[in-house]
Length: 140
Image (cartoon, rainbow, N blue to C red):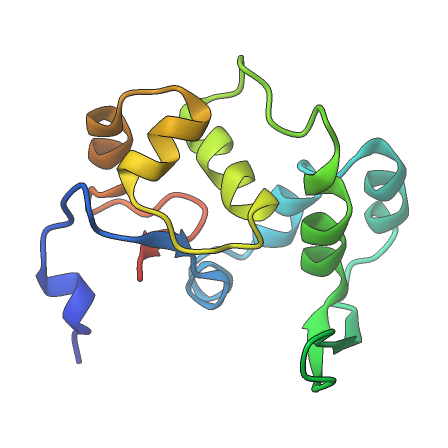
């Protein structure tokens, strides 16, 4: 069954985010790709693990406890907060991906992305709004 977002052509107001579940189901090497975005300290620590390590994550507002992937959690809560995480010379898809990580994967449209990474919104939309999905970045 097709989902509604797959039937619509994205426009500049379409919100995107990283769909980790989609990425996991489509790419056997998704963890290896994520490891490349870790800071040096955590890249070394996670290079030793081949299995998905789950953590108990506590929502600071509600106190709700959920299970979460340790690699994704570390990337979003630590590595993506480093000053040099997003660099001007990164490839466009990497910059977009890193921006979503640094913003806790909050949905953003191409205009919002363009404002932060200083690339044309039309270029961003034509890249992540195409039929090819990069690093799980998909319309919400």
